[in-house]
Image 1: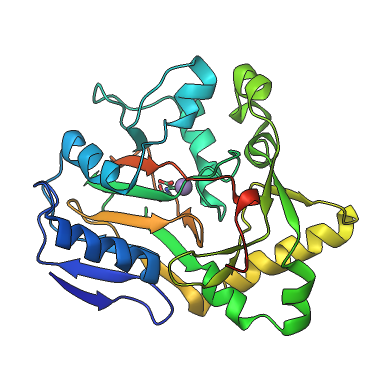
Image 2: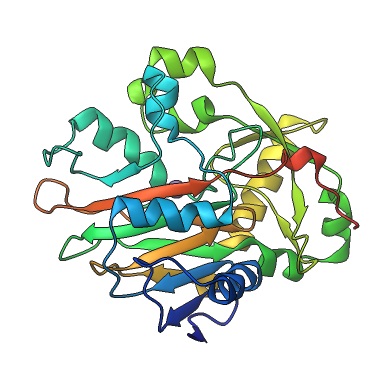
Amino acid sequence: MNLEPIHPEFGARITGLDLSQPLADPDFDQIDLAINRYSLLLFEKQQMTDGAQLDFTRRFGPLEEEHVSYYSRGEVTYIGRVGNIDSAGNRVSARRIMASTGNEMWHSDSSFRETPALYSILCAYEVPEEAGETEFASARAAYRRLDRATRERIDDRVGIHDYIYSRTKVGADAVTPNQRTYMHPVRQRLVRRNPVTGDRNVFVGSHVKQIEGMPEAEARLLIERLINEVTRAESVYRHRWRAGDVMIWDNRCVLHRGCGYDAEKYHRRMHQTRVRGAVPSIAENLDS
Ligand code: OGA
Ligand code: MN
């Protein structure tokens, strides 16, 4: 197994591993360390199946249920469908395409859950011939760039993350009545720290509505400033997908967004799994 960085600030390509087979413990341990250090890992030319993806995901911890079917219909599934093709091979509804454009805002997966997702894993099966990239940026590198006064201003703050707030930005009917009933705003630390490496990062994204105890206008400015710092052009890694690509990213410290594509013209089918976070971010410790 070999590792080479794919961006100066974060991210690495790992070669020499077949993820469709059970991983030997030493290989898994290297991947586990690499995801803590690099925040984003790319494996290419993989022959994945849902079973192999679920097995790989479970090595990192318990699965997180897919949230759209869970909160809309009470259904527990662990494979999220990303793109425009459903499990029967049909194109998904226009409403679902519209709702998924919410992923084109910079976000961290499941930050609207009390215990946000640890990692997301995305396997590409069908990709559009043009566009449909996914962009990633390191919220850890961004924290390092902040001046000391800003760090001190944000270190002990709490952000309010709200799916209804972020999804209704793309259209009032992007959320279902059940989502409105069952999804409530949650509190997350504005600054998190990786327990393995000790690195701190800002924790922001499209779901952040407010900062607790801060006047709204000031909070909005600060949230936008932090998102802009994370996602400044030279800090973005833009991934052009190929079928067989598998990516895993650390939602604690990476923001990502979809770039859009022509859903009328092309098929895009990627399967997503997520590793459940261990503790609510609010219970994390910044100092030890
Ligand atoms: C995701 C996501 C963006 C994309 O899978 O979590 O945000 O490019 N995807 O589809
Ligand atoms: Mn996402």
